[in-house]
Structures are given as C-alpha cells and as structure tokens.
Image 1: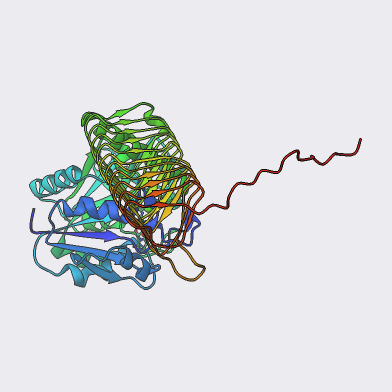
Image 2: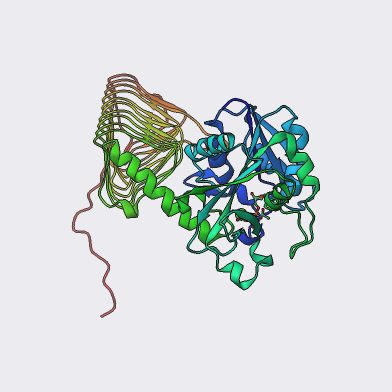
Length: 458
Ligand code: UD1
Ligand code: CA
C-alpha cells in the first residue's frame, strides 16, 4: 500500500452546522470528525498524508499537532476540486494513487479504503469513486449511469433534475485517482453550476471524456459513508458509533445493563467482566479495569479505574486515578489530580481535588479534601474540610498513616498531622499535630440550669 498518498479535504466552513467551530472539529464520540478520518487514513500507512484547511485553518491545525501531516492552505474555498488543486504540490508527482477523503465523513473504514485501492489497481482505470445507496440521498451528489449501467457523471443535488434527484445511489466523497493524471483533469473542471464552485465529482466525467476508464466501487454500508453536514447528521452518527463501540466491548466481555442509555468515547478501554449500569457516560481518556462496576448516572472522564473498583451511582470523576479495589460514591466527586490508592473509599457527598488518598484510607461522608497528601489507613470523619485556600494561595495538608480525624474537623492549610495522631471532633487544626498526639480545640461545654425558653406570642 506504501506508494499511495492520502488527501483529506477539510477547508470548508460547514455552513449547515451553523457554528463558530469549524465543522471538522465537532466531536463525535469524543474525537473531532477530522481525527476519525485521520485515524482510518493512518492505518493504510500512506506515503504522504496531506490535509487541506482554509476556514479557521490555525484552529484546525492546532487540534492535530502530529508531525506526519502535510498541511495545505486553501485560502478561498472555491470548491472541492479547487481544494485538490491547492494540494497538488504537496502530493508531489511520483507515480501512484491518491486516495481523496472528506474530513466530514468520519466513519470511513480502513478496510473500505484498502478494497477501493485494490479494485482501482486491478481495473487499471484512471479514477474510481465509492458509491453507496442512501435511502435519504438529500444533499449528496447522485451517480448517473447510462443505459448499460456504466457511470456517466455525478450530479450535485442543486444541479439535478427531478428524475436525477430520485436516484438513491450517491457519491460518498471517497475517490482513488491516478496521481500523474490528476492535475491535467482538474484543469478541465469548470465552475459552471448552481453553486459556482469547482466540483471534484466532475472529475469522473472529465476523465471519461479524456478516454480514461472510470470505476465505481459500490459499498454496502451506507452508515460508514454518511457525511456530516448538519447537527442532525452528527447526532445520527453519534448513535451509530455508540452502538458499534458498545458491541465491540460486549464482545470483549463487558456488560452494559442498558446499552441505549450509555455513551462512551471512541478511545475508552473497559476490562473484562466489568458492568456498566444504565445512564453512564464514559468520556475520552477513560480506562476501566477488569471486574469493575460503574453504577447508574455516573460521568467519568480522563480517569482510570484499577481492577475490581466500584463506582456507585451519581458520581462525577474527572482526571482521577482510582487504584484497584477502591470504592467511590454514591454521589462523590473526584476532580483532577485525585489519586485513590488501593482499597481506598470515598463515600457520599465528598469532593476530592488534587489529593493523594493512601491505601485503605476512608473519606466516607460529606468532606472536602483538596491539595492533600494522605497516608495509609486514615479515617476521615464526616464533614471534615481541608481549608486549602487563604483567598490568595492554595496550601498543602499532609496527613500521616493511621491518623483518625473526628467529625467536623477543619484542617487549615498549610498544616501537617503526624502519623497515628487523633483529632477530636469539631477541632480546627491550625498547627502541626505531632505523631500519636490527640489534638482537640473545643470551647468547654456549659450547662445553665433551669433555662427559661423564650415564649412566642399567644
Ligand atoms: C460532497 C460532494 C457530493 C458528495 C458528498 C459526500 C462535491 C461538490 N460534492 O458534497 O457529491 O455526495 O460530498 O459526502 O464535492 N471542502 C474543502 N474546500 C472547499 C469545499 C469543501 O476543503 O472549497 C471540504 C469540506 O471541508 C468537506 C469536504 O470538502 O470536508 C466536502 O465538502 P462539503 O461542502 O461538505 O460537500 P457536500 O455538499 O457534502
Ligand atoms: Ca459533506
């Protein structure tokens, strides 16, 4: 496959998205549309990978800092054929094929591209285009054949007659072209059409008229070749990809109790025998170990769960590392920089930020722990708060192994609690607590005898 180049067209604004974000940066399963296309393209190990950008070119380029991409700028978007024209220099003139893809056709599969390349090589034609039957062909270019069934030309929706609009076989926007003849044919394409644009689909008619063979590669899976022009199409593909991802992980031994209610990003990894309960969101950068259970209504992003973890219902995890056999929730929030060591427990209505919770330590009820280094086997009582912010700076709290913190304690950072120390309930800790000491700060309890309660009117 090595002597093919891949060209991806991604310069358009995507007007129909009605968005300030360039269309190819809209996310599908947590990855930009263009990222999906590039992932498929790279699996063919092309000799060159060229991407044409134009509308908000800097933003699109910045989203893909990879060094294997040659970027081409199409300053004015005069149409798909013009986009290819702009890329000719970057494609070079070594013999071989160019596979042309659209940045807005994200589910294109490497197997399809390989099949296309093979058919193109075997048939010896100048251009091959991938066609597909779309039951809703609106917006696509239609494949027009002659009486004998041979490809005549492609007609865009806006230029099509009523009869042509009834054609369900459409142009998928994926082409394979002989690189050496591409430049000559492009020059023959005019912009004399309804949109006044240089249409790449005209390449087929031009090549045919020039006497080169043209081929159709018919593909059976319309969903893999669906383009995203508007938000409805984006949502439709989101469902298609979700179903595929769920099916993949089911094959790998993961249970989804209610697959239709879950959403997962394309790069999520889930270990065998894990159970995902209804209404769970697993965002980009998430890895779930083997034998975990993620309870209902959880949202987990950029986080890792070690083997055998339990995340009970209604938890929110972002940028957290939860080591094996830990328990989180229900109703817990783990913010970026949180690490729960093996067998730790964080219970209901607790928030943990940028903190290390040592092995087997428990923060079970109504606590805020931020900027804290906590040892092993610590017990944090209900309502404990680390006061980590003085209004200007954040400060650290360090808690040694085996510390017992009574309920309703405030730890005013920066502060250290030595190992095995005990803190009495209701204490405000402002000074270092020595190891094995009891710290307590409470005003003595008074009793006033025969207290007369205030009487209300009447
Ligand atoms: C295009 C095809 C249509 C096909 C459909 C498949 C044309 C004229 N029509 O229509 O036959 O059925 O794709 O999805 O090609 N782009 C540029 N520069 C430009 C214009 C577009 O780079 O000047 C890029 C866009 O960013 C996009 C791709 O080319 O990624 C396709 O453009 P788009 O406007 O979406 O074409 P469609 O109307 O979908
Ligand atoms: Ca499109």
